[in-house]
Image 1 (cartoon, rainbow, N blue to C red):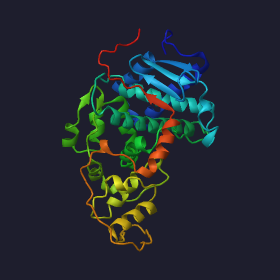
Image 2: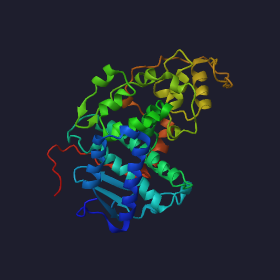
Image 3: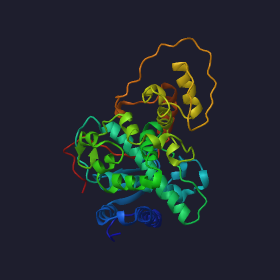
Image 4: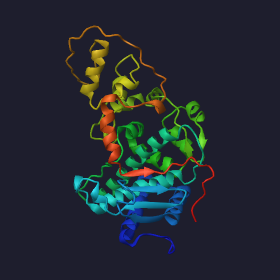
Length: 350
């Protein structure tokens, strides 16, 4: 890193180790696909973003934050104040690394974005936070495995609202670890190319570009139709099933004629739960061809059935009422925030 770049001395060695972990992740998972363009984006961020450790009171309850305008990452030096102590074998150093990877991910993804007012900003920010949660877990778990460290990196910030959609999309690319290429394209490459990995081209062309930010105006059915077979069996140990209340609706869609990819089925955290909900609504059991799944059908009065809306935008989805309170708690314990500004005239601080 440049000698004049500001890095707080108390975390300087951790910053260097984190940068090496990120480089190794891309080198080991992408191979020749980790081309010069992606390497340049990586080094551009490492060489221009300062990293400052702050007191917990200065940055409140966040683990860290990234400003692409000021080219600065701030990390909470009292990181154990708000994170569960030594959870999953992680210590203070690895928790700081997890947070740094998350914030570096924001820098990679947003360094060339336009500062502009657009109505999709909130939903794009949700997707962005979910992607950085996954990125930090992928990089740190790769680092743990490579160094024979018995630990498991799990992001404690943000909830199912941010995590469900990106984790479901990346789960569809689990075969041959294609999700690593998708992650690299999202962070270091072209976001239109990223979208083309899980959406039809006509849908990709309809998305709006804001510098390197892109709108997410597509339906869940669009995502499902590209790779329906990917959801026929769910590996519940997958990292992409964590903090994901959407994937079981995708699983069930393979076995029913109804389009269930609508809000009322997006709050189920297990196969059993979604089967009960489906059978309660439609008053019928499901016959599985390639998977033995049983569920007791309750004796219920005839329900009023409303057809599922297959074209509802993924942007407008919200979690069910009975998960909102839990998500609010998770947000309060959030480990990071992405600075989003709507002031088109705001300039970088000198």
